[in-house]
Length: 255
Image 1: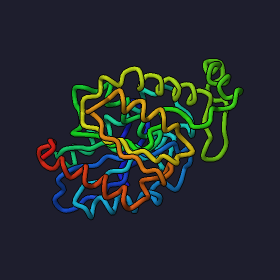
Image 2: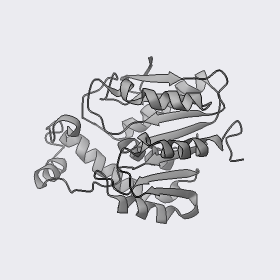
Image 3: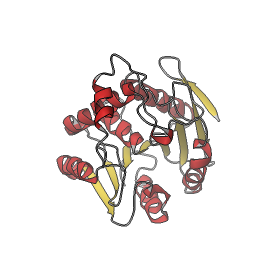
Image 4: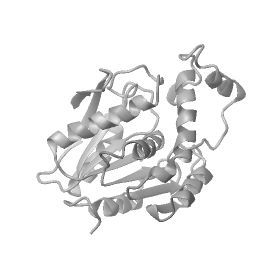
C-alpha cells in the first residue's frame, strides 16, 4: 500500500504490482465505488496478471473510495479527480520512468476521457476505457435529477444507497462531466482502445458508440455481445488489453 497527497491535500492510496524490469506502466482507475473496504481485494488478480505479463500495474483508490480520504460518494468538483490522476501519474513516474497507459472502467473511464481532453501538456502513451459511464442505461428517478439541479443548495443530500450511494453534488458533477466529454471529444489525440460490453445493464452502450463514431480512426472499439459491465473479469478481454498495452513498450509508440 502506497500513499500520496492530492493537490488539495486529500490522502490517496494505491497498490503497486511491479516486475523486475517493466516496459510499460499501467495506471488503473476503478468504477464508482463509495465503500471504505474491498477495492484492494477486488483488483488484486488484475494487478497480478498485468505484473506477470511484464507490466508495472498501479491501482488507485480514488478519493471517497476504498482506503483513500475524501467524503464517501461525494464530489465537490469533477476537476479534483483530474488533479488526483495527475498526482498519481507523477508518483508512478518517480518509481518507473517508462511509458504510461491509463486504464479506466465505468466511472474511471469517464475520468480518463476527460483527462485526455484537458491535459495536453503531459499526455500518456495511450489509454483504455472499458464501459465508460457516458450515460446510464436507465434514466435516474425524477427526484434524483431534481436533487442534482439543486445541488448548490444541498450538495451532500444522499441520492442512493449501498454501491449506488451518491450525493446530489456528485450527481451534478457526474452529469456535467458526461456532457463535457461528449462535447470536447475532438481534443483527444492519443491512441484509445474502447472496450464495450453490449449486455451492459449499467451504462448506455449507444452513447459509447456515438463517442467512437466521433473519434473515428483515433479509437479502436472492441465490442463483446455476451458480456456486461464487468467485462474486465473475462480472460479474453484481458488478453486483448495486454496485447494493446504491449504495443507501447519502451518508446511509448506503437511498434
